[in-house]
Length: 310
Ligand SMILES: *Cc1c(COP(=O)(O)O)cnc(C)c1O
Image (cartoon, rainbow, N blue to C red; front, side, top):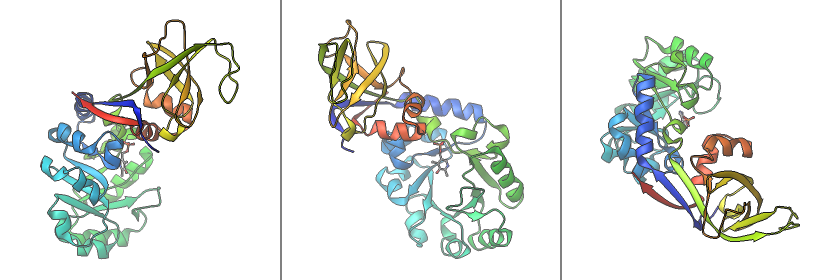
């Protein structure tokens, strides 16, 4: 996807901080801020310093992300799930901790305080919870004091806690979906989406507004009045809802680099179309696209030029 020069992606850092404060209060345990994929497209280098004092640490996919976002400068540690390097110094110099799920990696990375990943159902990036002998070997060879699972259900989180409690002092399991579940919170929670909800606004101006009865566009749609914006599917836009002058309306048809918007007599050239924002939430877009709010957020935030406020 190519960003459109005409689309403004505005990221409210104060909102992200507010989200983190609220999560911290609700969860009652430390937060591990998930800032992988450039903080779901909102800019990990901007987001991390804003919430650093509210989190116990950060979580990314690869070490390169921690380096690019200068996460070590925040003074907090970063958990790295894909431990490509087996040299502990690569992590220590960046305040990073590699994730391990085999005893050989745990042994090699012992000096970098590796974190154990336990698989409770995802069947990737973790040692199976049933493999108790192997878990013991990893804990022992890595000197492991922290373990997590990427749980999607309370049952998985509880099974993880039951198996590891007493063997590892610091346990976490819950992402956004499980933060509301007291029995899944354990010693920390790892929100991604919940940090970013409501923080990004994606907007684009109307460049044409035309009265017609149709048929218009490629599909021959009919609308009394339609507008055109300079963003299309090559920029990541898909059909769904949008808002013009405070009214929720429809994206009628999406072309390569432009799209048709249903308008009313109140709408004029230059008026702003909200593609994501207070009225068009990540959750609403996700429903229209048949996907997750995480995917909706990361796609929408890549649609234009990013700007940070707050
Ligand atoms: C991405 C990720 C999260 C955050 O998920 P959200 O649903 O966005 O909160 C938490 N834990 C792990 C292991 C992840 O990969």
